[in-house]
Length: 377
Image (cartoon, rainbow, N blue to C red; front, side, top):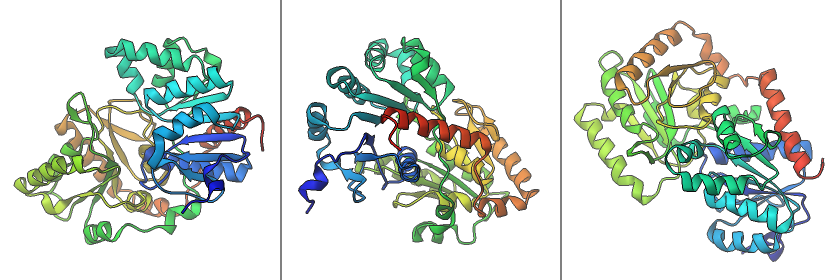
């Protein structure tokens, strides 16, 4: 049973409202790593975890089972003077605006996917609501230039828009401390080359958002040349409504003779140990923000192939969005190039350091949150 003191907001300067692992998805992993950096910097915060039951004494409080009641209560009685809302939901941005306009709090919102860009193209009413909300907060953290431009089109002043790519490197011990889950390890045993992907069952404009269907086609097309191939897609946020689609994909893999070469891995666990041991990472999404897993692959030295559906960082090989033929060609080229660089695996498992540009970006991010919290260090 939780104590009353754990449920009540403490005297912290900064409230973070967002998800915390498990499951280990892009946003929850970002928040977990952000908390580690805030701890090191000495920035006083409390995270209200909307994504799971996970808690950490003195820092992370789960409100997962009572999200709506919590948000209503916090809008009226939340005590922290500064709030960082990490959510792509329009309702969360309206909540942030209420805190800023109605309670006088310093509020920042993080936008990590391209949903706002799509609203401006096809849903003007939602776009207008988003603009009315975001114009009232102190800062909008955008993970890509395209999202930052979209926020500017809503009339948010440039000085309140921060373009800070979403990837935060793992702490060095985290790279080698974890191991793949037993199910992942059993599937990967003896597989070569290994292609890793991640995501969840979701759809955008009627198509598989994360391109899971394309992974099945990829496995079938590559298997003649790579009989020991293994493609593993580590999935998070799996609900009962996802299983029928995954069953259909597994049936398609069986029909194409690729069932033993593909695994849609639904057990919770960190993605880094799977990614670090892979020969290639693929990101066949049909829309995206700034994919943290893509930047993580590049950081670890793992060759990466991604769709051209969004801005991609330097170092990623691109293929035409939803074009299976072009995906297969790009993957083949990447595998050949990777085979010529055996030192890549050493780099991927040897605790790489963040680049100076990454360090500058992280510093700017922490300074923004420290300023939001009133300079607490």
